Image (cartoon, rainbow over all chains, first blue to last red; front, side, top):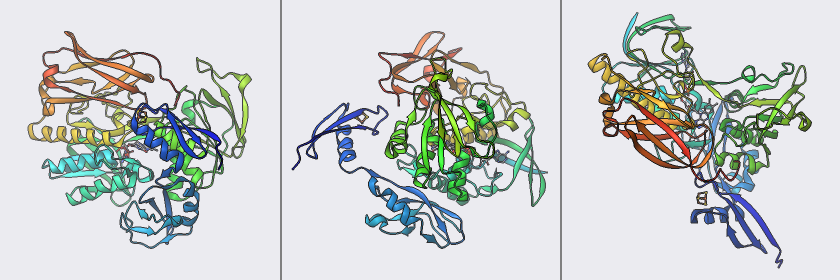
Length: 121
Length: 425
Ligand SMILES: Cc1cc2nc3c(=O)[nH]c(=O)nc-3n(C[C@H](O)[C@H](O)[C@H](O)COP(=O)(O)OP(=O)(O)OC[C@H]3O[C@@H](n4cnc5c(N)ncnc54)[C@H](O)[C@@H]3O)c2cc1C
Ligand code: SF4
């Protein structure tokens, strides 16, 4: 096991204060967190350092070539965003579409569905 | 000539929210006119999340937020006339509009709500020298190309201006496979939300160059690159720092201007600071029976405030329809130290709706901590401590009728407290 000490900085976005939080990692484990003005910053910085998650919003093509705006139902690991984009570039959706409808299940094998964010007749 | 109770010009979130509220208040005949082929305004192209946090307590995307109001407007029997451009409005509320089905449409309205939104400042507004090659777009136009029409504006991109639209486009274009070289910002701080700086730039390792600007655009047919340089404290470029950045596209995200051609034509009094009409506590303009809300009134960063204003404008219109025009005595609302503007610009304390007024204002610069003072000729009537004041985030505060009663003037000023902001985000 490596015991290398690593330091990462994370800007907390939970509130407009935008604290710059320093996270010290020892052998991949969190050994210290500083710079945050409140508790929420600790939790935020932890997930940001260990497994940052993001909602992805983008568009997919309809069969008639119109664009359909979509989003992932839940956040997915940031590292998989480009894989998700690649998969979604092949999707073709048939009209009509209802807002909230699943247009692509289990994107990038994350268990997260991609849903329509508008309706199209 | 058609006769109408309420005509709303613009079918974006402002127009739609006003229409929904007007129907709920019992106005039977509500007509919304929009020049586009679908209602929803600018939200149709804002496919990212972040809308509706205040109103729905949810993080909706732009199209989702719009669809809620479109559905409700339809359900409540609002008439929406699309592909129709309003060309003329007179002080006695006659409108001339045009579309390809009916040609010229003439309407006499008892009340009008202006909800035309805003447009982006273009290259002409900031005077960058160089030729005029293809590849220079405003960020909003690029957003429309990518999210609605399905075209990529370019592959190697520099963005000038770090407002939210610029930041969001940096991420969007990166996701679609473009290389965003950098975002260049003349001010020492970003004009966008911290969350957008983090999730749109830092997430994708896109540099944000503060105190920098574009001093030249290269290329004759198509953009081939730009020269960027640092600016000094007077915002003058320091030419020794100039360097060439290769790119095929320059996106401009350098501010929005309320779309008030119609209002000016009608001789509605315009506030030169906000770029929108001067209004009172019901959002009534200087012309009786004509109200304004949303980005046509002043530029908003949050759609929730747009909806809130639209509701107020609709209430104003309903009162006007019920009791006609009254000559109000207004007292002035004065913009004091460290504020750029305060809205509404005048009020009649006796005719305040629901016993309170929501004031909106913007600071002139970021402050870590500040005290907001609201004063009358008698002295301070209210104060509030504010944290993290930023010019890009509107300040909203409610003042009750009781607090203002008997005053001849209401003045707002902001006083910075403690140190300056620690970081430049
Ligand atoms: C490019 C861009 C991106 C934005 N991104 C965000 C964001 O991410 N989050 C956020 O909260 N806010 C964002 N905003 C702010 C946004 O403008 C407001 O949240 C909100 O959409 C403003 O609503 P509105 O109804 O006032 O204007 P708009 O949505 O602009 O609607 C105005 C409507 O009026 C119509 N119109 C104008 N003139 C006429 C005429 N003469 N005749 C007929 N119709 C007319 C237009 O076609 C348009 O449909 C953005 C703004 C812009 C310009
Ligand atoms: S650490 Fe707390 S105070 Fe600082 S930005 Fe995060 S939530 Fe806000």
